[in-house]
Length: 388
Image 1 (cartoon, helix red, strand yellow):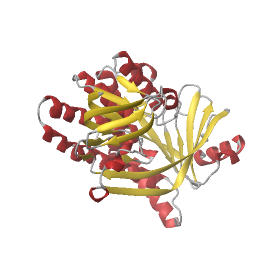
Image 2 (cartoon, one colour; image 1 turned 180 degrees about the vertical axis):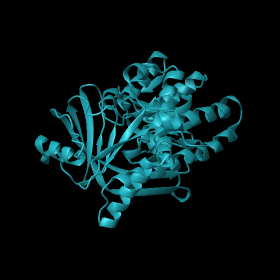
Image 3 (cartoon, one colour; image 1 turned 135 degrees about the vertical axis):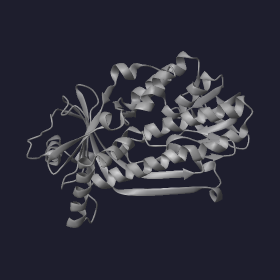
Image 4 (spheres, one colour; image 1 turned 90 degrees about the vertical axis):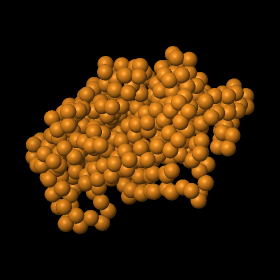
């Protein structure tokens, strides 16, 4: 079959791009090796920048984020056993939304189904040809298919098969592996705080997040080789409580732990994001450590720009418009990489750190919360409200 835009990857980036294109009358086909149920059951990030929430609502995907999501007007930086609130609303006039990525996916998948979008879940044996361009796969019924398209978009995640189609001599991959990971849990317990807590402690970093009124998400820094099964619930709670303990007497609400996982993370950027008729978006082009809550938001920002440029290229006879994609997207990507790296290195216990290094971190944290300029920098990065 033939379509205007073939999209590999039916996560939020691929589905949002397909949705935005459809609003402009541009046809697309989206395929993914995973079933819809598999994607829905993959726990991912849960913080949306205000622009990401507006994109869902203003383009008619769903207003459920406004009903079921929770606006957060700031975060707590906790260090030295004390909490210091950074007030996003007061500093930059914006909030972020606590809204799980699985819900973003469900909203988008429902919108594409409602609007008659062509989305094929559960395919196999996928390959792409950037010269045709074309996508070849076996559908969920076992029938071999070929989709020819004018443009091919790789939104197929960090293990992208599309990214590998950019000739090696023409690509640059910038990469940083971090020497620590996050031990993440989901617990059946009431919230321990109204907003997220980012905690620096002598034992390492901890993040106290939320999911719902009755289920919470929490993380603590660990070795990447940590085996979650070796940690009992008592040991996990002892570690988390120790990392947020302080003279103010703050403690976490405990409950049964329903999930344990170790999350490795890295920084990665692939350039160029466009090669001929192939365009990369989301994790296929870049990944960030989760400390700054940028991954999903960067993916949605990518496809927001890309949909505009595809419209100009296909409907307004302006093929040169696609040349703008990489520079425009990468401008935001590298800002997000810097912010995520800064948050990560400021808050985590670094291997081989001396007393000087730890005291310097505490001095940096103190400067951020004591200075309006420092707090504003954090608020701009976290909410995505970077100056032009």
